[in-house]
Image 1 (tube, rainbow, N blue to C red):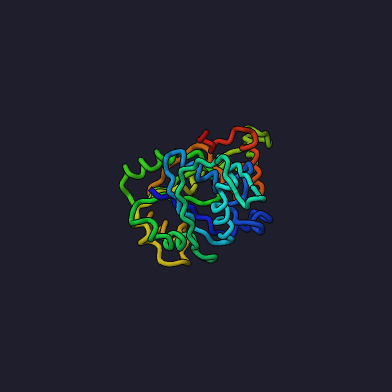
Image 2: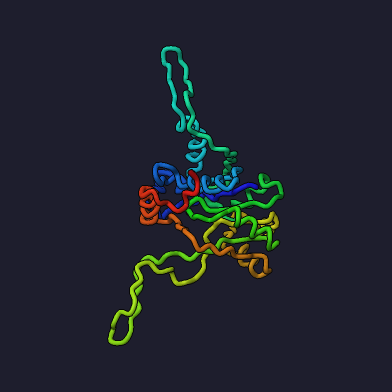
Length: 258
């Protein structure tokens, strides 16, 4: 089964990072967040990736073009004009198709543009800027069991600020440092789709998260997979630092691989 990763957005809220490179190449522990996402899927046996490029997409192409070089010991013999890969540390079983899907194309339009690579088969989809400890094998089985067109992983984000429960005379009854947002389920990415989902997308200007998802829900074809574990987007520098801190602590919840 192919895994589509949306990696073409501008990522303007992450500041200087997005000026220098596309957000999916922002590094967590000296590896792009895109690499972390692919490692999650690969751990569960999903190794065929279609990556939708847009803003500074050439940099993502260059990253994969030089992947073996960067992950290997290399001897440069300048006297004889030779380059020799001495030992490769890159043992990824990945097949990666990189597709230019346009600078201004919306999320739905990007999916529509890679239709020819999907071979009219079910596929997985996620964003190139979020990490989770979702068991994607269980997610797929859940999708196959309910038989609808689309499955969306639902998550409850951690609140940014501490919450106070205040009683009479302004006495604090309870303090919770990191409560769950507003207790609402939201989309966490990590979708599974039947090929019929493409019929809900009209053109480049269509956001997946608007009319297509709304119509899927209206037609009873959108099912939620509730994930109560770790999930963290990387929309801001602060959120990038949270992920970096978890990685450096050796306790990154999304690191399901060894």
